[in-house]
Image (cartoon, rainbow, N blue to C red; front, side, top):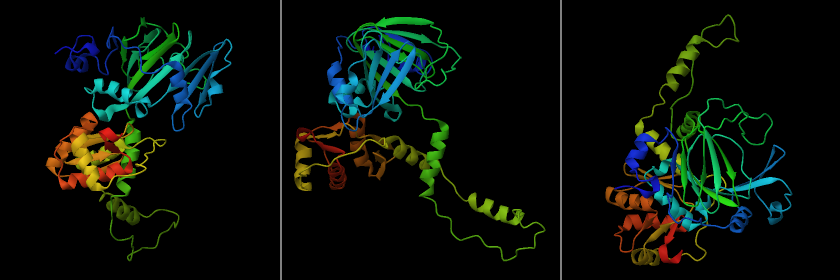
Length: 375
């Protein structure tokens, strides 16, 4: 079956021929799409507590950068300066944004970062740059000119508050209209310039640094390893130089550290917790007047359940990970929870075991989900 979102090719063809390989321009990827917000609504969101947003200005070739929190007055009085506002994690605040992201379910959730929305009046943008993640740039209302380059030179302008390329050589460019979309793989340099008042919806997919994964895995391990005993040297020999670390000490400690082992199961559990961990600014609020577990169970059966917009779930084996927590479950319960993770909702009349209701109720009290009608 052909996919309109991908310009008539299947997800399998896209993954084979374009994903992490080369750009793809898709005209009318989402026909009739005008966006989910107007500029003022985006600015209001940028001024909301717990929202990550940036304001980029450009005047006489010089870039300026401000980060949230913002006040409404911060978006006035720019004079001749070109400017742009970018709001991260719009899918955490707008149900329609979460629905938009679902169109990209052919990419594993473990790779998804968020939906960023940007607005710029004519001439606005953030300058030529490159990202280390995959991104789909879906045009809302207005028009944006995208220039791209696969250049190897990634030298940045010194002292600039943003990672702006010093010598950007345009290889291709297009003007995107509402509903058009451009896919860019990592390291593809690009520059977006507003042709008129315009808004762009950026669906980003993270590519973690191996160094970051290794460091965080060691942090994960430190709470899960237990090495018995303590260092001892009853046969200590006199050393000529007391400042030197002795060979026997080195051997004993090295042999002990080698006892730290892990397997694929440990790595999977780490990834589940790490990839579902909310960003530091994300918090959850439980219900003001929580239902009893019995009434919650009845509501779940009657109306179904929906994940909170900020909640993240991953699955592996018979373990479900939600917001950094690992929850081993029975195989029958795993299938139900995997459906919740896949679609972010469970329909009415879903069959719940007593054990799974108890777990879902805990998540409800934590603010991770709620009966669909009561959201």
